[in-house]
Structures are given as C-alpha cells and as structure tokens.
Length: 232
Image (cartoon, rainbow, N blue to C red; front, side):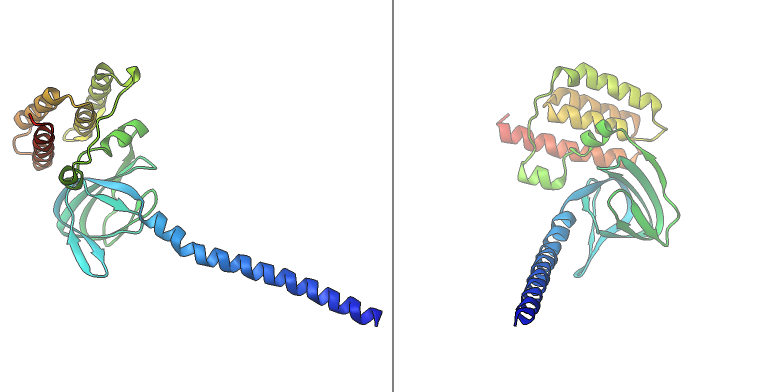
C-alpha cells in the first residue's frame, strides 16, 4: 500500500509539472501574435526620395507611395518604371538607394531586394536620422499634428546651422539630406522666415531637381497649414 501511495504521489507531481509547462507554453503562444503585431505596427523607415512607380503591396492589392511615406517592418514594396527609391532606417541609420524593377521587403535594419541590383548604401549619424524622421508628411499636415519643440542650448539655431554646413560640405552632389535635416529642425522650432529662405535657395539652386520640387511643395503646404492654424 505504501509503495502504491508513493507511485501515485510521484505521478501526481509529474502531472502537475507537465500541466504547468503546458499552461506556460499556451500563454506564450497566445501572446506571440500580439507581440508580432505590435512590432509590425512600428514605423522603422522613411522614403526620402522617389522617382517612377513605387507601391506598397498588400492583400488588397497595391497602393502608390509618396516621398516621405513611413514604412513598417514586413512591408513589401513594388518598384516599376524602372524606379528609384531612397530609404533611411531609423534604428540603424542605414540609407539605401534602390534602382530598377522588382520588390523590396522592409526588414528591421535594411531592405531585402528581389530582382533588383544591390542598393547603394551608407550610414547616417543618429542625429541626422532622428531629425529627418520628423519631416512633415501629408498625414501629419492634414491632421495638424506637427508639434513645436523646445530646443536646448546644444541645439540652438547656430548649432543647427553649423551641423548643416558640415553636412553640406561632406555630402555628394545632389544629396538633399543636409537640407532635409535643416528644414526639419527649423520647422520644428517654428523659424518660419528661415524655412522660407531655405526653400527659396533650393528653388533657385535646383530649378530642375524633381526631389527638391517635392520637398519645396511639401514644406509650402506645411507652412500654409501652420499659418492658417495660428490665424496669421
């Protein structure tokens, strides 16, 4: 009888441990989809330049994308035309320039191309990426969600202008990243007159540059929205 009780007790403990393990595993499996969904909803990249046809692929079909659209991990893009697409990734600072016809899957820190040549790429500074990511978009302009930010002494207008001049000296010909950085910072500080001056300089120095025209049109719309909202 004692032996039988010992066996039953051992089986009960084993069953209880197995049950606890199964319950823990079930909780992990239940929470996994929400974890993946939350990760998938995070915006991790931005289109900073686009030529030709670039569309977001979904179960419902394709949707054309515009410059300064933000992308999420797992997004798939279709390039046709051939197209040119320039992306920056917020976490890694990686900038990619894709050309041709094919598809791109947006991964955490880079893109995975199919049918496309290997993209040109280099790494931007964290400060540059963080500021360019605040470029106004059609969505933020329409929703009027652009916020005024207080900058510390380390990010004064003089310091921002110094950073811009350094970036401009180091940038290759035709690279608009220095201007994207400068405009975003000035707009965030509501330095309206300086923003308008930078736009005028861009218009005069790059009259035939399609990327510059897109940037100018975007900020003109953002300025108009800002002035109307403030009653000026």
